[in-house]
Length: 429
Ligand code: SDX
Image 1 (spheres, rainbow, N blue to C red):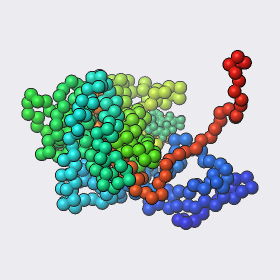
Image 2: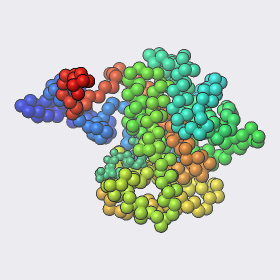
Image 3: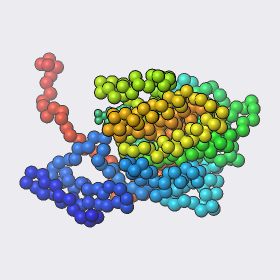
Image 4: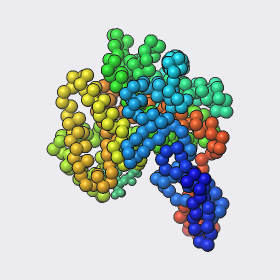
């Protein structure tokens, strides 16, 4: 169909629009000239049928429950690789050779420290601030510390900013956590791998040696792989839109972090765990299923449903397996929250409402149980999502900046407000 045309009849006008074919997945109708040819816009709030860009990074088949990073299935990457290998793949498009991987690990490791004055920046926050509020602030503040990598027209500065963002996000996340629990910041250790370093920065205290549990580190590294990128989701689209104006990469990632915080998006892992705690026991599940189905009740099953996946989220399956691995390693035999989650999933997947609306558990349904078992407070769950998603945001931002056809994003609207009218002096109102 590539190069073929579609036709649109608008009144007495017939408008030809080219059809563009991707390598896999749905073709698109190029409507760029629609307004010029018809004086009309398309209307698609929430972009349910709109492709905002061309991309070669991640592909999702929502009906088949398929997720590919640069063509590689998420199951294979999660099984065989590590998070920094996935970072390299998302950024450069190919799996690294051993030498490329060693060089990439070395470069990232040596960017993990943050400017010492950022520690003072944190002092301005209340101790009881939500860690995501601290993250939005501190990521944005990176523009105030790393001026030498904010010129987006310079490929070298773009590369440095990308490395810095990926390398420093775990350090900032650990600092956000330590700050809110009143413990001293822990500096990164170059002798540790990316995720072990992060665990140590979160859980080590000066008073004693901290030994990273390799099973937990491997599990968290896999969780980072699962969360690394996901096509043009809300936060990635936010990063792209912010970047399309030429804003510096740190400001764009701060914008994406703010968007991710919402409970309909990255905040769902925190909301899902709170929901499981509120349900409390298997006996209460029917009441909550009824609430989720009640059109007059705003309650939704957090961790269920997805804009694209109308089948099982492939990441949720791997997440569930990781949950059991972590609970076994920690000797947690019967976690009441897991019992509620497994039974809630069983009941929901056999309920007509969820079947008809194709609502399946998404990645956020099981992640909270795992992260809580690892020792993270609920308020840190979305922060961990942001740590992983930063590479996806950076890779998508880089692709957009390097796309010669990119221009500032500027959607139009359907205006239903007042037509023009004249000002009336206050005495006559
Ligand atoms: C993430 O986009 C991404 O890729 C995101 C993400 C990523 O990696 O970046 O995958 C990460 O954000 C996962 C999603 C996490 N959010 C949640 O778990 C929150 C709960 N889920 C929902 O809010 C909802 O399912 C969304 C937001 C995820 C998707 O919403 P859509 O596609 O806009 O679907 P919708 O809101 O139009 O719902 C369709 C119908 C509605 O009923 P009707 O109006 O048609 O009668 O399904 C119902 C909804 O009421 N519905 C739910 C439901 N989700 C949708 N009913 C009960 N519980 C739910 N969870």
